[in-house]
Amino acid sequence: MVDRYHGPSSLYVLCTHFRLRILATSIATEPGPALQDLLRNMCDVAGATEPFPSYSDQSLVHLLPKQQAIIALDQFFKDVDYTTDIFVQSNFLANLEFIYSQPLRARDEAWAICLKAIVLLVLGKEVSAQTYNALFGDFARSLLPSRAALINSRLLNTSRLINVQTLILLSVAAQQFDPHGWAEHLFTHACMLARTMGLQHVHHLPDSTGANETLERAKVLRALYTRDKSLCITRGCIPWLSRDDCDVASQLGPVMERPAPSSDRLKLAIVQDDVYRLANADPRRGPCSNSTINSAVRRIKQHLDQYMHAFGIFDSGITDSPRRALIPLEFLATRILALQHRSKASDVEQLRLDARASCQLLLIAHGDQDRQLIDAFNSTNCPRTTPSPPTEDLLASSVGPVLFASILDAFSVPAFFILLGDLLQPTGNDGVLGSVPDFDLLGRVSACYK
View (cartoon, rainbow, N blue to C red):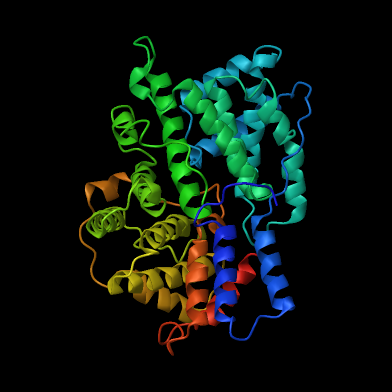
């Protein structure tokens, strides 16, 4: 296995803890070689990543036919979500006209790759989880040159905004079509290039910088920051953009339009930053007092509750539209990580409820029409009282579907292991009364990944 860091919510760490727990509970019966080999193999598979292709220089990438690019761009800007809202449309179209007005130069090759990535994302959006197949995956990979060449060549190693934007789009595409770990690899390069350019310091731009350029840089920073925190929570990745560097909220506030298409996600990302810090506090810096930890947890819970009510996380027909489940799933993943090591009875109970709700919502979004499953989720999570008048945030936000992602990307893997751990120590209450038993629930969740 490649020597690499695995965060506390990563599949490898969760599998490792599960293996140790199984071995500890089996100590009296001395687990046999078959069980030990099975558990070891599980951890090896969870920690394995397919190597990124070796670098090989590429010849100049050709531009797509202009009409094809325009059709794709029209759909792309209609479907933009928080991961891809990184352009000012008028700027992009002006650059497009310039690029197509002359022979493609080597320094403009990133634009050709960017357009191909956009076409790929637009096509991929039309392919649902139920109809996705290996043939489309092969087509997706053939549409773009080698990812390794894109990262290491002159195109994406130069400090230009279009290079960062192209890497972001390639990373979003890789999360759908390429092996596990490649999307994070590409995203890391996007963050490093952005930091090299000083994108995290929006206030330090020269006075001569135009309004559209300032806005576009802010859009890129927002997309990077929100996805950075999302990957930390859902995949246990290393954070590359920290509030130690800059106060993102105050940096972006003056330059983002209101209402911002992704204001809801930025607010969740700021809370996720606090959750990550809490979950990854370094004990060598001195033990935190219980009162300090409790205060931090209370503050996070309060912010999450405010976010849930302000943006109607469970009020938007999430059981009717699979893509609307992504943000609620990530919200649950965030709260699970915040409460995972708490001992307070109410926190432990909320942790179990959120873990079960995550599994239920994943199945519903994946197409499971079991009425008992849907009713169980709705009875626990969806409001049963008359909703209060919408707040300004709710009216201004766009908590709508996330279009360029899979529901599996937002699912809390710790949720699976929380319920699995409970099954190892049965309490005589297998799941919620009247609901789908947890054992059956976990079996169905596993089937979603096959």
